[in-house]
Image 1 (cartoon, one colour):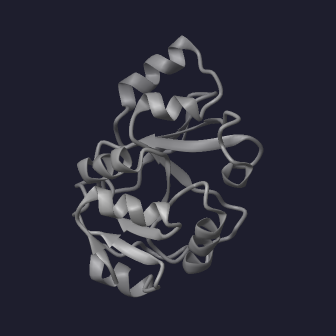
Image 2: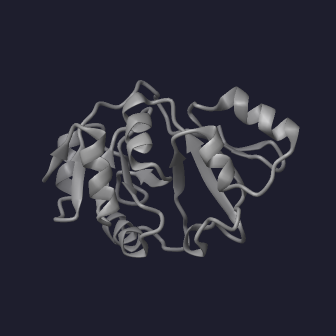
Amino acid sequence: MKEFLHPDDASTWLRQGKILIHSTEGIWGLGCDPKNKDAIKKIFFLKKRDPKKNFILLSATKSQALKYFAPISIIQDQFLESIWPGHTTVVYSASSLIPKHITLSGDSIAIRVSNHLPVMNLLKAFNSLMVSTSANISNEPTPADPTTVMEIFRDQDVAMYAHPNGSAAKPSAIIDLKTMDYIRE
């Protein structure tokens, strides 16, 4: 399996429609270009994931993320300013820039602006949102060991962005920006 250390190399891989195992704040993730339907389908296949479920999108900055949300209020903007970058994913109505194949039930998307430096560097080099989901077979635990993750997802279209995970002990919190209610704490 290919391994990349430099974000430019990893972002080139993503632009080629490939899948990237990447570190996050706490667990290994699988990422791809959200515009690439084939890469998204392959992640569903590799994870044995129900195609009715959608993925979180990672953004390099709050301003980039806001382009992909429908307009928000000043209060919502201030809230986002208080949590991003960070370990909180936000669900909100998608703007027209989001391809229909990645919206959640209806018109919503889930975005996180990560504070994990390797992911931040990757997203800046990629200059786009990135699909991200836990690097596990659906309904099974996510392995902590990168070697195990690489064995599970061994495929010619999968590479590793080889940086360590952060210290978070659990997946990101998820909040609905419309109601300000936590979906997952």
